[in-house]
Image 1 (cartoon, rainbow, N blue to C red):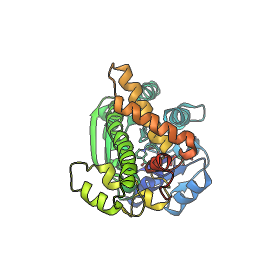
Image 2: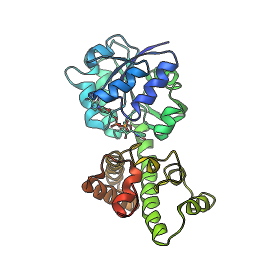
Image 3: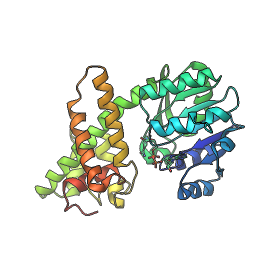
Image 4: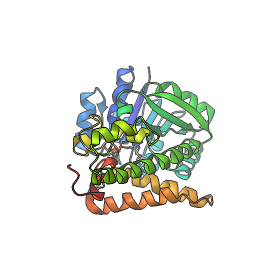
Length: 298
Ligand code: NAD
């Protein structure tokens, strides 16, 4: 069994670090928010107060943070993980941070004799809770060899996609499709309401028809039909609108860099940006429907 640090105990970090503890690993956790720390403590995570304390004696440092700029600060700052990790240890970043940030951090790790694996995840808080996440890994083979056995505690389908950044590349394309699907599910659900279709009948028929998708089935945006969807729990996240919006920014910026137009993803980015501007940024992404139709009960 290994000693690991877990930085970022939010919607994903809490259940993932719980699964690490349950697999028998010793987990040192850190978060800037007390409710997050308290939730992790209850799961058997040893909560500490500085990154230095969390990482000084571990085999691997997991990061599960909102975006690339936070991960960069936490990893490369003067009191960050790179400054205090033992030689040979590996940062395994499970956040969605984009391709270039992952490559930059991997290069900086190499200069210090450390490893960095980009290991973004898919499957949502449900997949994090039951340990069934899909993980897409980018990095050198020797670092991936350290990451893979540890990641078996949090995920089921773990694939080494290629060199540093390739895990993030895969995540960019997956989440572009997921986010477009979510935007479509929300817009069309507003139309279904206007047509006075019974939400349960609408769900039952579409999930047995060609309009079905993972997003529609698991994160159905109207309340009271899918018990496990955040829409049935006051639109509490789950996966926040501000995070799906960040993923669309990454997808559209990456597409522009490679001379590709993602027109549906550009439209979805505008929809989620508008929801964020309406004050819905910390709601679950299913809450886009609230911004589109104020009569949807929340
Ligand atoms: P979250 O906001 O719930 O969790 C992030 C946590 O990081 C918060 O608890 C926050 O307090 C903490 N944090 C922020 N700055 C910190 C710092 N400097 N030091 C320590 N802790 C700090 O976000 P989440 O939903 O858990 O998502 C995390 C990452 O995973 C994001 O990149 C997201 O895009 C990705 N992701 C999320 C989901 C999902 O369904 N929620 C699914 C797949 C991938």
